[in-house]
Image 1 (tube, one colour):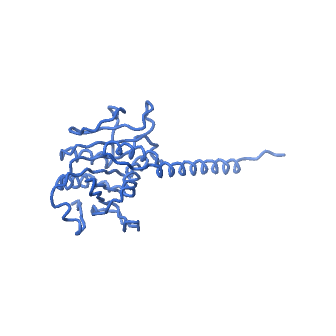
Image 2 (cartoon, one colour):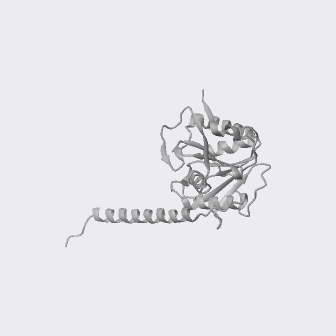
Image 3 (cartoon, one colour):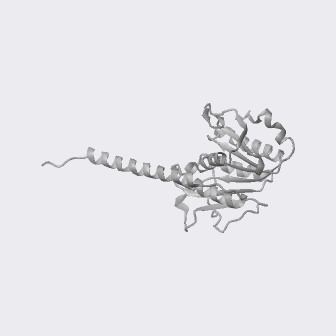
Length: 243
């Protein structure tokens, strides 16, 4: 039997005693790691408070020290003044428990008064057909809209993000997925910045993405330097002409 438990710390139980009209933001370390980069950045910039964890049967066994305390695989943060919940997934749930993870969290979110949800993901850059930086899709009842095109028919949202999207729809939580373009295997803070800028618009936030863009530049420069070093190494290993 798959076990998923949403564990709220004792000192925050009272906050969720009555329905609270919450907005959820979450994502996963999928394409470009957009979901995890964006949610962790939100936590940092909004000084969010960690209020709990999601515990699962096959939960990865790691932890680390962060400014807010111990980092765990699946973390629940609160920005109480803005009625915002941020679920940070520092790891992917194991396949046998992904559906239970999505359904159980969606049920809990609905129970505590969850009103709307925003999902962060990445979209393979090979599907870009115009100059837009992202695509989006929403469920019934979601009033958020963008001028940019929605995802094309035939393109799939996959993995835990897809299951979350389905679970929230089943629980009748209006949900928006924002999918910036990215190379699938590339750690992409710039794509996460696109997501942050869009939720700035729809949630009335004012989060500066400068740090993300600067970090993205550092990543790009490091990747360029690595490619050049590999090129030089390959040339030096190649056959040399006789003099």
